[in-house]
Length: 72
Image 1: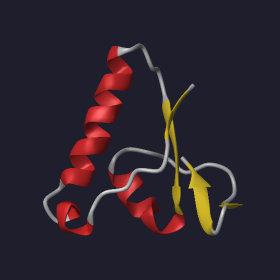
Image 2: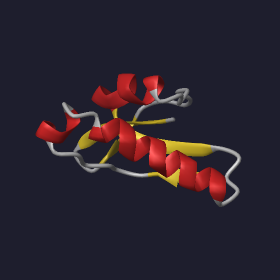
Image 3: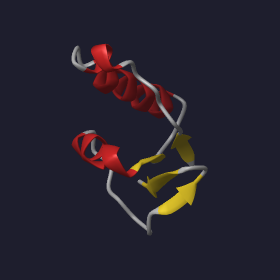
Image 4: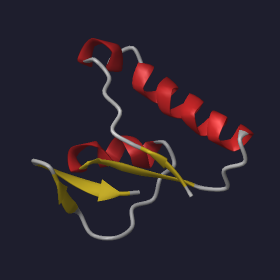
């Protein structure tokens, strides 16, 4: 199973779609290396972004450090 962990993109770069490009390239590279599925842990306020990138939520949100996260 492959995982994408906490990705940090500068706010000004998000407006330039860098966040989408980073996830796209990570997914492409994982596929090249044989990944059949990729999971991600992210902060709950970013779930819309990950849905648009093709991820599907599963499980319950959980606390990790000081922020809520959700498995995808």
